[in-house]
Image (cartoon, rainbow, N blue to C red; front, top):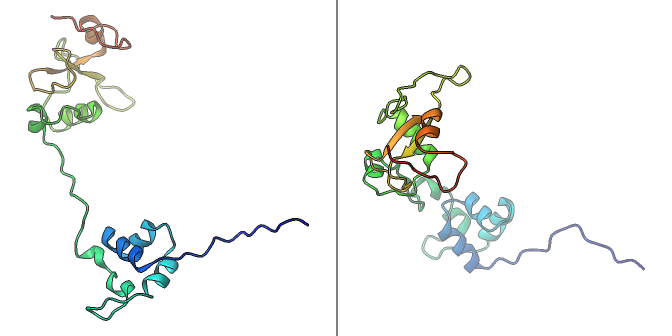
Amino acid sequence: MAETKHWYKPAYHLTEKEIRYAMRSTNSNAEAAAFLHINQITWKKYASMYFDPESGKNLYQVHKNQGAHHSTKPSVQLATLESIFNGLHPKYPVKKLHARLISEGAMEERCHICGFDERRISDYSVPLVLTWKNGNKKDHSRDNLEMVCYNCYHLNYGDMRQKPYIIMQR
């Protein structure tokens, strides 16, 4: 005789300690349910079983709308260009740095060697490469960075596909 397979999940046995841990780690009932990988109906069932001795309310009511009052997540602050130039962010992504230098007006959108500044028809951007004069990609000082066109890069810095890049002094 073949065994029957059940398609349902086994019952949860969440303790008050697990419920309170989820409450400390999250800001709302929805977040607490997601934190424990259960749906909100199951969370409500178990959180309503236990009571807070101070307020007399069940834990579901105590944890309701906690997200509006405070946030435990740290706020993300954008690195300023000055802090990047001063070397405080040596691992700052090159693509973001290239875009910010142009968008914030820290560098002109033209080749610093030959002056090329023609825009492409497809995306209306000037095809430029961000380069480091001393070859150190972690040195983001203002004097070390320059924008060059692909032709000047090939003539002055070498092949882009080579790793590590061979930097020739001008």
